[in-house]
Image 1 (cartoon, helix red, strand yellow):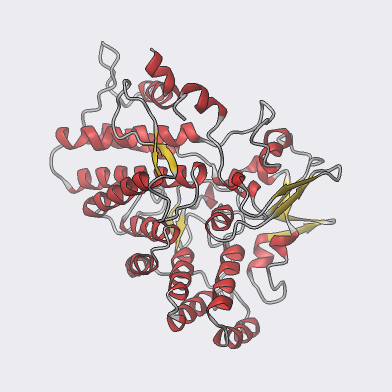
Image 2: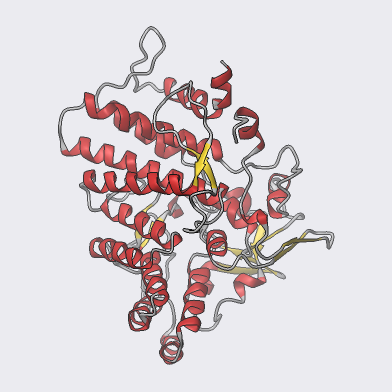
Length: 442
């Protein structure tokens, strides 16, 4: 019982949830034993459903949002300590980062990876299922690391504290955090297994919460970007773009590009800006000032002024679930090319992208400016394009972590100032209190 309590949030919650589902054959001894492809698909579907909406909380810690204590929404108390970076003494009702939910997803993926291969007959559907499980596990570990561990540094990753590694159901295992390098090693291994097995280039609309070949290459692209493996990031982006490369041209079709049913969608798994947070927050001046409000077509799509505040129109609905989309591939390829000082490729790639985001006059002016940029200027511009493009989509906090970790100021409704200093240790989120109570090894 002692060992179970150490990781109760992982196993007990997950097993309880699974055992309540009608599609599983609950044996008399109480064990959950899937047998058929349909059973295992249902288990993995539960794993997808369990994937948490944690990126909206990360956005609160960055420079995109103003939290409004006087809003009509009732949710301010649940978010204020996240907004103030008060990790040491948060109010007991503060929304915690969903450490447990990410491990629950890993549990479901482990059931597929460890059990399905020996039970199911050989088929493309079986390979696709197991490939998705490897991909989902890799993605969950990637998010865990980038929430609860320091940003990847090749020089220190071997000793930097990561997160616990659970690759099978073992209630006797002591779940001690592994190094960041070891977790990245597992992520890379899992994505390679996924690439061998996935056989759907893309998923159809409505099923695109599931991984596909395009999605695993998109994940691989993001992993290599965060590891500063620039050449590998470009190679992966090109492989993903060979499958899916469409961009929404906002000049012709003024619609949000992050919709699950849009031409850019690759993986529509996560709700990255939930209703409760959307109702009590506004766009920060740091965010809105990043746009050319005359020529950038995104500005009118993303924002709307109410009195003295600017509301964010993105997010808050299932139709805008988004984990990966083609815009990210272009901007990652541009950034990685610029890092390698291949300015020709970087400029060509970013121009291909922004042509779809600016009015003709704005694009023509930017084309002249980009042509004259040196490496530093171009990297700054690409970083700001990511800032603009992915507003309220959960990227900004992670981009700040991996790049400059700048100083950020937040204020409450009474004029109190809260500061995250440059390179503040709070750029890494501590393990939630519940997780530490359940597992003293953390």
